[in-house]
Amino acid sequence: MCNYYQFNMTKNIALLASGSGSNAENIINFFAENTNFRFPLIISNKKEAFVHQRAEKLNTPSFTFSREEFFDGEKIISLLNKYKIDYIVLAGFLLKIPQVLIDAFPQKIINIHPALLPKFGGKGMYGMHVHQAVADAQETESGITIHYVNAHYDEGNIIFQAKFPVLPSDTAETIADKVHILEYDHFPKIIAEIWGK
Ligand code: GRF
Image (cartoon, rainbow, N blue to C red; front, side, top):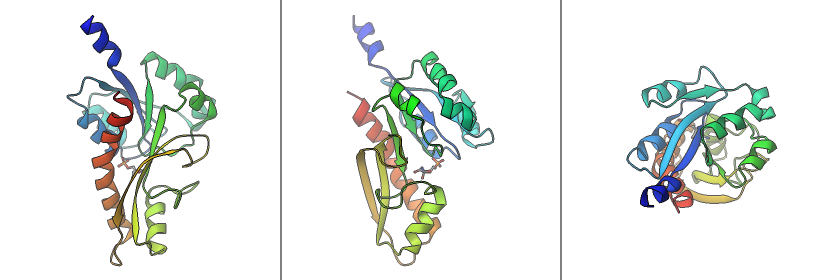
């Protein structure tokens, strides 16, 4: 009885990343000793993304799908089902999530955005573009937003935000570093909080 209960408590989470994948690695390491969460696969839309090297080091299988395969959804959903995936985490994933995937995982997909939405969000607002825009606008603060994913870029319900002050001496690069520190600290904890019950 006890084992059966524990088995059912385990949440299988797919990580999607298009680039370096440092958040994906940080999340996997954070939960390494926690049997309630498993991260059995990483999916990318870029074969050359550094996240695949991280995946290899972490003994996590990683897969690449083309933009067309993403938008079609069929192959992805069948892979997610094969790995019994319950939830999806976008950790630096750049493609828009198609409706078919949102319908297959309703309210079960979250994203991290490297600014304080609704500011500095939407199409084209990713990576250094976001930090450069924050610096150019002479914002006095920036931060991170973790939100549910819907069919529009960066518009799903906000789950969590954290901020830091932007100093006049900050550049896009120093803002990016500060964002990453907040991401590493909060993203795994928010995953545990929303899906750990
Ligand atoms: C993060 O800042 C994330 O918020 C944004 O893309 C960046 C990915 O960084 N969406 P990494 O690949 O996890 O290092």
